[in-house]
Length: 382
Length: 73
Image (cartoon, rainbow over all chains, first blue to last red; front, side, top):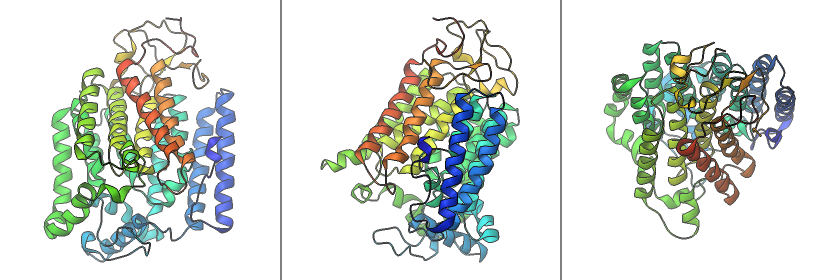
């Protein structure tokens, strides 16, 4: 029900915004009622909720055609640049909003390439983000655990201000979708597709590269496939980096790494909280905390699919909490990874002979649709 | 008691409960912000969410959730 709190549209106006909010409210009520009643057809409700929330997201985009945020202007400009064969890192644009980034491109090129068809066909990159969230939710409902995969799938689209993230055109749904495809592909032993999906993830946003050691620790993915994905991603990025290295460095590297922490005074992190008290913790604070989280997850979690999902969520969350510029979207990504851990991870069948100690071994990569394995042998089929 | 009702004959572990609660806590940040900007309440929510994830990593209980039908530990 909390999803009905300011469900959409910070900048939106008019009837489409009302439609968007009404659809979100109806979906939230339907999901909540069906879930609490433990309905046997909850999966159908989940599929329906995804369809309706796509409608809500489209209505929200219509209600807010020109959000005043640099991200939307940069993605639109990049898509136009691709349409005209120009370098996205040298495009010139401005949001007109004081203090915001202007000109160039601050993400990795994969995000612009993935969103380009939606700009070319529908005129707005945000339709691509809606599609990415819908695909993620559908994969979780279809291939996750029968009920908790459905619950998690609903929560990908339905939470407080979920559509705010779409309105602002943050690209995190793209990396969440590619990680989800990677997990489903490994689960179905389509490891080639998993390598491609992870490579796509790495071409979209810098933050995804934190997942590299965690993917290497996942036994069914492994360090060789991780290296292939990373190599493929670098090969994809290279033409943009080599065409104008200074522009690429300025947009994709220095803006994120070396911009003043004080310019991100409004970010959502402990780092920002310390800034608000007058001191700057420094980059080492972020590095030490993130490396510590990676090591902790490496030591504590099994190298299986569930371990990867939970590690990814935890490491991204720790990174966000201790870095200078996480916003709502980075937290959406961390929470989405946590939902994947629930959707593809540790649920067991009721009524089976549960034994303490069997949970560590539940593995999404070997469980597959319809079966759930553990080393302890206590978990039955689905 | 589990965070969510048991449905469809599946049973969550305590660790699932922790992770779901963490996701809810983090996603709840949307209710604590205006246009994505800093607020102490939002930072508190994401801090709690991160702590819950860390506790799921460090001390994820191996016992089933009491919301399920399995035997108590």
